[in-house]
Amino acid sequence: MILLFDIFGFIPFSLIKLVDILLVALLLYQLYMLIKGTNAIRIFIGIAAIYLLWKVVDLLQMELLSEILGKFIGVGVLALIIVFQQEIRRFLIMIGNTRLLRRGKGKWNIFNWKMQVRNVEAIYIKSILKACKNMMQSKTGALIIISREADISQYTLSGQQLDARLSSALLESIFFKNSPLHDGAVIINENRVVAARCVLPITEKEDLPGHFGLRHRAAIGISEISDAISIVVSEETGSLTFVKDGETNYGIGIDELKNFLEKVFAQKT
View 1 (cartoon, one colour):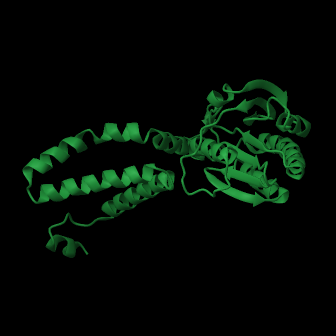
View 2 (view 1 turned 90 degrees about the vertical axis):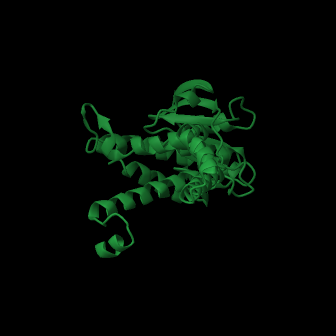
């Protein structure tokens, strides 16, 4: 293999170069997954096309066009930061949420979640499942956000501050159609309903089902920029949707929601 590369004038092949290629391929794949289904994918394709064109005209020694495209590429990093600021934010959050990078009380936070998460899990699941079941039966629209480790306080401050103990009765009363707090999202953190009527970012994905309204789009949006979990009850159909990391599970039942929540919290143990 080394001889083949040498014949064609390439840099000799080595294991380090193979690892380098695989890492670049992995980064490109993660970038694609972040911008898939959004307007950003078209911008990315356009930038990639300009870069390839620049390489071609440079190879053909078309000096004038190469100089123009070179100046454009020269400011490309700044342009990418501006254009892809949301995607870059999501990428950095994804890296920051890696379990090996988490710290707690001066130690790497790998083993000290078990008892704490089990206590939280029992209250979360019991209260939320009961409220969702009742709201599904009455077709009461709801958007519940469970905050985890990422800071989403800026969205909490956009709503009505409550700081009340989590219960199914409280959730149902908030989303009752005549309640002044029913419009918007409820944000839960550490067994407490922190705020209601919160305004969330809307996803830019274009490949969503036509019946997804603002609640579903907001549920996806907040999960794309943080590790928060979103639960949506449809006002039109009473269907239940679970959203994590921008991925939706539509039309699930209460038992499936219970399994999803248990699985998410079990990942911290």
